[in-house]
Length: 330
Image (tube, rainbow, N blue to C red; front, top):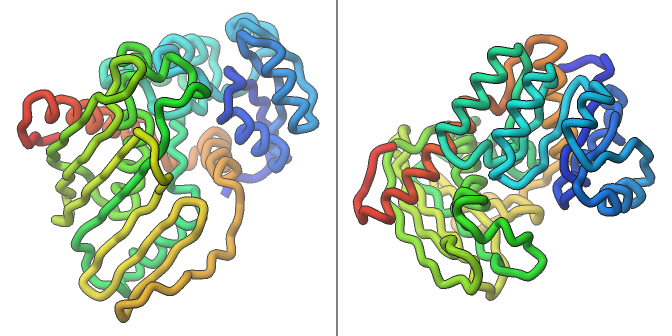
């Protein structure tokens, strides 16, 4: 586990997710907030005020990095800006916490990874599923083997995706890389792979495009074959209705049900019973402890760039499966 060496962190982007990065700075003595950048300075100032924090505010991230010289950056930008920002930050010698999805496609991921390697910086992608308390507890139970062999996984995520509050770039394929599959489905894919301790090896997908904005898909139904022999379905719907975010694991001797931010249940005899979860550490605190350990102690990253690139590869295969109507290997 990481000790307490200090690391100066600058934030690029003051959108909704940036608040979680600020929470990690507040909770970890080993993180120091160096500066924050957003093209809308008032938004950045309001975010800082909401956390009772004070740090320099910039509207140009390149100017911020050249002026402040942070040790690391958190990149919270629209997907189409990830490659440019990550390569620039690597060139400046900054370690990176890059929000998911890593980039628009595998080719961009390769460029980012190449830059990180050339300039000797650590690159971690913000796949937070493995840091959520209910998921961590579920993994402990799965790895104990008490429920037997994993047979199947059913993941459901229903939201109102086409809202006026969602930034407009989300609704355009060339800016977001895709719609609900890229943005939310990547979470489902990561969750399933990590909890099942297995990788997606082939898949078949069907998408719909009934959204009233842009050119992205608004739903996706995915069938996934895992390397351990289990299968999984992912049902993503963005057209409104009742919000839902849960994942059910079926084993030969029982079941687990994860309800995001609501808890974990286990069934050994046909009835679900709640599972107590004691560790409520903020997911972003755990995420930054991983990055800090990698930087200062050469510990392995929990979420590598190679893994995150593979998630993008799976998402791209989903889109190709829908276009071709075929089952495809990943």
